[in-house]
Length: 416
Ligand code: HAM
Image (tube, rainbow, N blue to C red; front, side):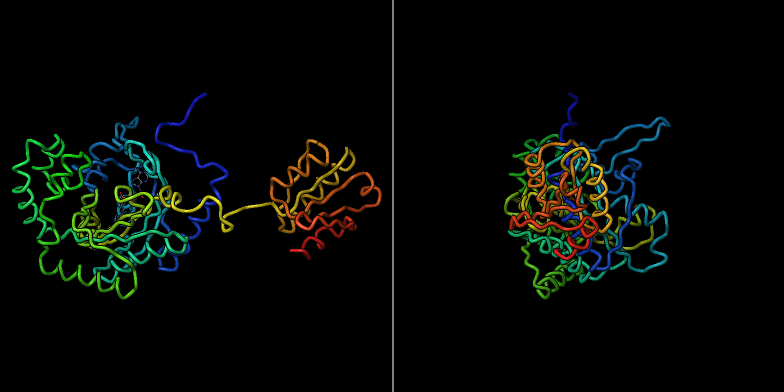
C-alpha cells in the first residue's frame, strides 16, 4: 500500500461536514466585516517568500518545499498566504481602484515542520488582510474579526494575546540592546541563533531550542523600547479592543515567526493546544507591500489554522451533522425500477434520498436506512407495485401509511 506523505493528512468524509461548517461560518463572518475572497495560486517564486517572510526565519531557512522547475525557475509551495495576496494586489494594481482593500483567502499551506499534535506539513488557513488603513482602529477591527470567527463557531477557552513589535525606527535601537544582551551568551546559543545574532537578533526570541528560549526569557522586551508613535498606536489598539469588549492579554515577549510585522502583533491561543501552538496569528505590516513592488500602503491581517480550530470543536454537533431525509427500499426485481424512478423524483423535489441497488432483504435495507439517519423509509414490494402504492414509514414514530405512488413527493413535503 502506498501511504500518505509524512505530515500530510486526509480529511475523511466523516470530518468534512465539520470542515464545511467551519469554512461557511468563517466566510460569512468575514463577509460581514466587508472582506472579499481572493484565490491566489499555491505556488509562487521562491524569491517572494524570501523577501516577504524574511531570509532568517525558520520558515524560509528550513521549512519551505522549494524546487527548481523544468525551466530552471526556483518555485516554492506557499508556506503562508500573505505574501501571495500582496503580490497579487501589487501585480493587478488593486489598490488603485479602492483606497482600502479587505481580502480573504482559504486554502492549503505547506511547511516542512516536525509533525506533532496540531502541527502538519500541509495545513489549511483562512487568511484575512486589510490594506491601506493605518488607523489603530483597523488593528482592533482585525482582531475583532478573528475573534468573531472563533466565537461564531462556538469556540471557547480562547485568549487574544497582543504585543507591539515597533517600527523600523524603534526596532533599530532595540536590536542594538538585544545584541548587547545576547553577547554574553553567544557561545551557548545554537548555531542558527549565532547567525541570527548578526543578521536579525529578534529572531533569537522565537527560537524553539530550549537553551536559547531559556536565555531569551530574560532578554529586554520591545514594549519597553517603543518610540512615541508606536506606543500611542499600541495604546489606541488596546482602548479600541476594550471598547469592543474583546478579551486580550499583553505578551511582551511575542515577536511572531515572520519578519514583516510592524507595531501590532497578535495570536489567538486555545487552552487545549497551549501557547506554543496558536490557533491563529497576525499583525500589522507597514512596509511589506512596497517591499514586494506595490504602493507604499500599510496592511494588517491574520490567519487561522483550520486543523487547530477543528481540534477545539466537538466532533459531534447538530450544527454539522448530515443525514438523509428518505431511504427508498425496493423489494424484488420488479419493484427495483420503480424504486429507481421514485428516488430520483424525490431528489428532484429537493429532498435528499438514497437507495441501494443490491437487492438485499428488507431487514438489511432498514439497517442501511438507520445508518444513513433516514427520517422516512419509502417501501415498494410486489403488493405495493400491483396497487401503484408505496408504504411510508416514519423512522422515529415507527408509524406506517400507504399512499398512492404519484403522491409520494407531496406527502413527504407535507411532513417536512
Ligand atoms: P502563522 O502564525 O505562521 O501566521 O500561522 C497562522 C496559523 O496557521 C497558526 O496560528 C496555526 O493555527 C496555523 N499553522 C501554522 N503552521 C502550522 C502547521 N505546521 N500545522 C498546522 N497549523 C499551522 C501566518 O501564516 C501569517 N501569514 C498570518 C498573517 C496574515 N499575518 C498577517 N496577515
